[in-house]
Amino acid sequence: MAVLHHPDVEDLRLVDVLAALGHPLRLEITRALASGEERFCGEVMPDIPKSSMTHHWRALRESGVIRQRRAGRRLYLTLRRDDLESRFPGLLDIALRDEP
View 1 (cartoon, rainbow, N blue to C red):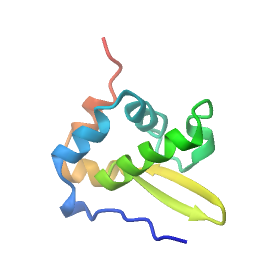
View 2 (spheres, rainbow, N blue to C red):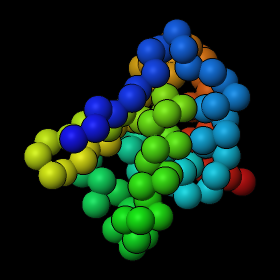
View 3 (cartoon, rainbow, N blue to C red):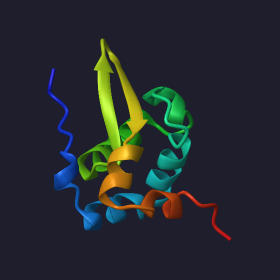
């Protein structure tokens, strides 16, 4: 089983985080994880096919927005709120606001 790459906090780049959050579905995923609780990937966006979600999870993980953890055959997701806040203070709060 492949090891999931998560960038270190000091390696997070604003352009990568903004690109990840700039896609409407990825922003919706981020909002679904905003509570900070770890969630099984199949429950985050249950109506979207897994084949589509894999691409979005990878973009969010590689940009540093989420952390993924494997447990057996399941994949769990958490928002890297503390890491993002320490690197880009206030950014996540702005991104997670409801649109006017």
